[in-house]
Structure formats: C-alpha cells, structure tokens
Length: 324
Image (cartoon, rainbow, N blue to C red):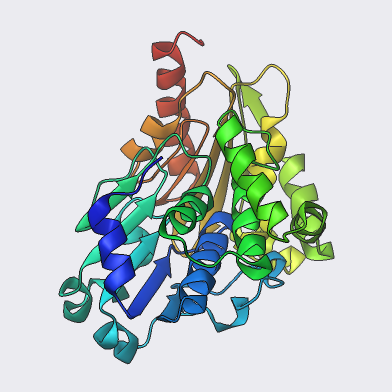
C-alpha cells in the first residue's frame, strides 16, 4: 500500500491544509479526519478539520471531536491543499464544498471505497484497505509524521469501527499489523471498543425494538424500515439506526440485510452482505456506493417505493451471483 509520490509532495510542502470527511460521518471518517489532522498539526502545520455534520455522540471522546463542523469561508480561502477523506464522490461532502474557492485548490482524495469515482486532482484509492484510517496510518508512517497516543487513538477507532471490531472479510494481516502499531503507540483497544460499542440510549433501544418488530425476510434477504413516526415516538434520531443493519446481518440463512430510514422526503438505505456476496453495484445503481459487503444510498421517494426498488435490484444481483 503506497501513496502516490505527488500526494506525498503536496502534503509535505503545504503549511495550511483543509481536511474534510463525508456527511453523516462514521467512525472511519471521524477517526481518519482527527488522526491525520493531529499528526499534521504535531508536524507544525496549520490544519482545519471540517465535516458537513457534527460528530456522533459515541465518537465525541476522541480528542478534537468538538471542533469539527462545516468549513468556514476563510478556511477554504486560506488552505493550500484540500484533503478529502473516506468519500467516494463529491456529493458525499455536500454542496458547500463545490464553491469556487474549493475548486481552485489542489484536491487530494484518500479513500477505500470500490465505488470511488476519482474526483480529486490526486486520488489514492485502495479498495483492499479495511479502512481509510488504515491508509492514513500508512501515510503517516511513510512520511515520518508524528504518531503518538492521540493520533493512534483516532486511527484505531477508525479501523475498529469499519471492520466491526476486526470481523469483516477484509481484516487482513496488514490491517492487524497497522492496528498493532497504533496500540504500541499508546492507543487502547479496550477503551475504543468500550466507548464505541457500549453507548446505547433508551431512545435507541426503543427504536430498535420497533424496527425489529417489523423485520421481514424473503429469498435470503432480510429487511426492516424506520419511519419518521417511529423516530418521533421514541425521541430518536436517524443516527440511532446505526448498527441495525449489522445486527440483521448476523441472521442465519440470509445473504443481505437492508435497513430503510425515512429522512426529509428521502429514504436512506444501509446494506450489509455475507462474505462472497457483492452489494456495491446495487447501491451504486441507486445513487450510492460503498464496499462489496457494506454499502448504502440515499434516494428520493417513499419507503414503499424505495423498498420495491432496492429489493428488486438486490434479488437480481443475487441471481447474477448464483445465490438465488
């Protein structure tokens, strides 16, 4: 896993950098943003950390999480280089970053999604990497940038969350070696797993109870839906559905799990698949993207309309892959 030489040069020579991760950020997005950001700051660079959305509650223990927010115009104007992390296309970083000051800067994309459309001036995309945080750890190592406990904690969080605590099929010896280096630098695996995976609120439990009560299963696909009424009744937010698709994915005799969440006239879909099944094409065809076993999309329409579209596309994909 080797970053392009021009990427290394841009980062080493720049003194003011703007780092951005995607909307509705997960652990890999926030962990990569903070881990690389802290390392660059400790190397003496001025770094702005930006995200269209706020940091999820379960990730607010990470150092610097409270300063993450939309980039101010002056940050866009002053940055010499913009680094986009864990984002497969420009839409994932929201419209505010499509402005002229943004487009006038050299843009580096660091990502591990197989559906990445290579939208940067310099693109480092490694679909075999388990997490963008793994790539950031390797970049830090190759550039000789600082790696201390703060940096390591952020990057280990990114790896742990995207591998579901080292349980995904892309958990290779290479990613385990990267995690080992981060632990040796001071990060605590026990602390990360405790903080990230034991953060359920009563509202989330209420929402999951309703969602699990509506689970359906047919032809090796299991799915459920979360309506706006369910969210309101439980006092929950859409982020409280995080992890539900992973939970359904553990159901025996299934190949794909799908969770559909109603959100402001659109439907957000989270998809998971068993090893040997590729759902990235389904998500990409519906306007999203992701990995073979973890993908998603957001699409205009009602729950009923999107359910019909995604189930039809999923069953067609399973037939093509010899699973149905």
